[in-house]
Length: 502
Image (cartoon, rainbow, N blue to C red; front, side, top):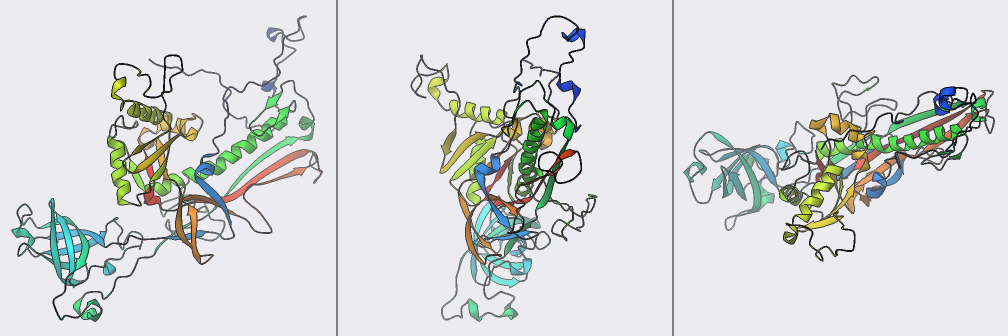
């Protein structure tokens, strides 16, 4: 069944600063029952709220916090992995493993977090090498930079093990599980650089940074129009009411600006060397230049795509109709922080698909609704929705994400950009422990939090100021000018625990 959306919807904000004639009935036109005929029309003064609550603000307030800062950028550090596991290639005939990156794919050419010269594998380590579908225990007999000679315990070389073969080099993964030394030998501390093996392992420093962006908006109305009474009793999300139309226009501008503050933290991304953004100022996405550059900021979706996890679904672009996708998500979370409680913010299609998936788990309902299983009876309304579920050791709490449904926001973009459509995001609940370089200590913070510029002199979290001659006179301009400004950015800590559903 096809559904056709209604037309002639007043869904586009007017760009003009003055009161518009299109907002009023023309009482001089006989075709619209105006003053040219003797009958008085029945006027419905109250403005109809046909779009309900039109704002999308509230997502970040549910899952994060807000903190002030007094710098042009925010820098934070995150713990690396505890155990040593590397990726590379194995020459099975010589048993030489060549390291190319760490287990997360970081290498010296990507972000500097992992350097090949300090991979951490040492002489006499006992390792587990996964190659050609096999998991083979081996002993490290030589370390020469990125070339690690690991001899298997059960054969002379890896090519002597059934199924591995001698086909040149093969992709492999190496995990250090311990070490073995002969009696009377020196420990790791005795091995110098001459052996080609590091004496000790050091944790890698993973540092991330983001910069705030300045967001502005503006509204203006002349003094004459500000004192003009209309026949429509207006209403709005900001609590405005009465018969002054400019109150609605100013309130809508304020509500729209509040949404911008959230949307910029969701959708924005940093510029790189290929960008032609005016005044970008940077040479790559890690070059945060002087104040005033349009070098962007890292939003939630960009952070998850760069440092987190993506799922395109097991059963297509709409949410999975069985547990296959969630089992794959659980397996990925097991590789990361394994945080037990997670929030699911999804669009309508994904929300309904998850409801259908959970309902299908009730075998008694295959031929119809079963009473009692969901505390239902024939005299009550049936609840076909679910707010959460538990799978394995993980709890998922589901919530609709209005931003992904509204046609005037991401919902309309998703309809057109099908390959880049976002159907939901999974965010870990709770807090993470991070090192704050400004304070010089570890702090507990939500995984998501907004940082805004503020000091004793100026608080730029949400600034509003009015100039002109309307109300309190500040200039000789016969108008009211309302300015809005904020300077903020989003900090996404532990993005490896997030999942973007596309």
